[in-house]
Length: 248
Ligand code: DGL
Image: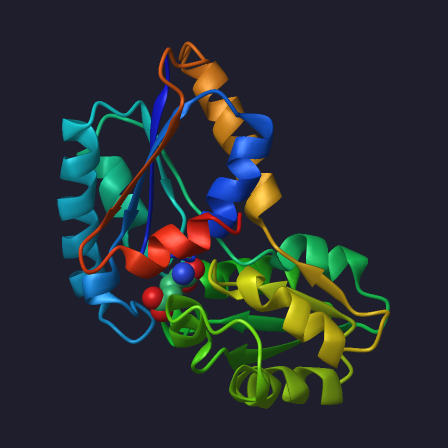
């Protein structure tokens, strides 16, 4: 049986859970939304490490075999600490610069992520390694996390918020846009309507799901839990988490 922990600063990690369940449908998932401490995007790495420890202890108490850090910001800040301190595997997220750099035809890639992710050494290393031959334009998705937490996925206000971060990337000629925060895929229908049809948006969640499957099989974890399903927990109110869960 496999019990798998998944956490994010809020509901955004549900976009990762959605992809994981497509290829691992019979497991038991323990999802933690740390929404009492959301957003993580402007918090210090130490603050996020402390939160990640509290959440990982909770996951261990639930008997999980692995934890998915379904948050780019928390991965950048905390995954190396978690891997050093805990004996179970941690699978993380990072902006998909590598496939974007390979796929772009215009030579301009846009990265949408939180401020924390964009200044983290982990992201800067990846950008240096795979993005040196192209132009990378970055934007913080200001207000995106709040839209998703408030379930405001459509409408004039959501459009204005999304447009203000997306437009500069499109104006710079980006034909490939990396969704570097797990909340952002919930705003994808809106973004697709704003962008020219040739623009490709890359969500790393399917690759992370495949990585999790590999890690579980490398560790010899028995798949197919006797009690498959999803348990949802939140450090604040779980109302919007439960509603968003019905949409995935
Ligand atoms: N969902 C998150 C990420 O992938 C964090 C958003 C936030 O709390 O700022 O980066």
